[in-house]
Image (cartoon, rainbow over all chains, first blue to last red; front, side, top):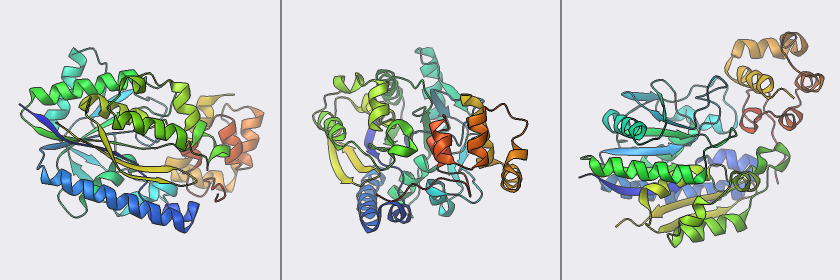
Length: 281
Length: 75
């Protein structure tokens, strides 16, 4: 019987240069602190010798364009490529020094997809979509020079309304847990993004965060109280800049009712950086 | 407001280097055939990404188009 042996969530723009440019020396310092915490989490994950790592993240209109924006999409196939962007700006630039290709856990991805469809989750699938910083910055920060296990990238539509609900994301996470339990693999799962930043996805509001809202989320997660989190409304997530918390909701469904332990929380003018790990039974 | 037209143009500017170069040389000409409102067209010609965001352009696109990305001031 398979098990989820590691679960963590973390911010995904892990680029000290970027945050120094937009937030000054404090930006660099806190990003480096967050990355140190994430690297330590990666060491604990590697020690589990897991067979696969599920990565739940969002697309920043890179992999999917306006021909299709899937609510939830499972990347299948045997390998995935890093997104390519000429003259990359901002958060795209962090990708440039990362490996170009990553192995996938084809059987686990197919199981999540096929059993999900059978269970009523109308999941999208992709053989070709590349992955951007939302996937690769956390993965590479966690692993450093160590080998990265086969991945199962899963996209959640966090930005293009209408997004899936928090409750639906949680239910999808519960599905993932059932698939893993029926499998023969030990699996890690991470969710990326957040915490609060870019409220209302408005240029005019860049530089605002909502630390009060983040504290509420963290408190519920630390106490393993997941029902109030499932009641979060799309409008609430939009106004507080918590769009990417939908990725975290999938992870919460997969590990519920495990309590969270905060490894790092750092407030910046542009974002509240976070690294959180779950205490699994 | 034509949300699709604005965002598909932003996406093309990000991903299509040749089109981006043409836009850089002649913004009005590059988008002449597109179904945009006057306000949207004016914002693109002015390369005013903040205004394009107000008109429905997705934040992550206006922040990441090479050479055109908006860079809000440090706070």
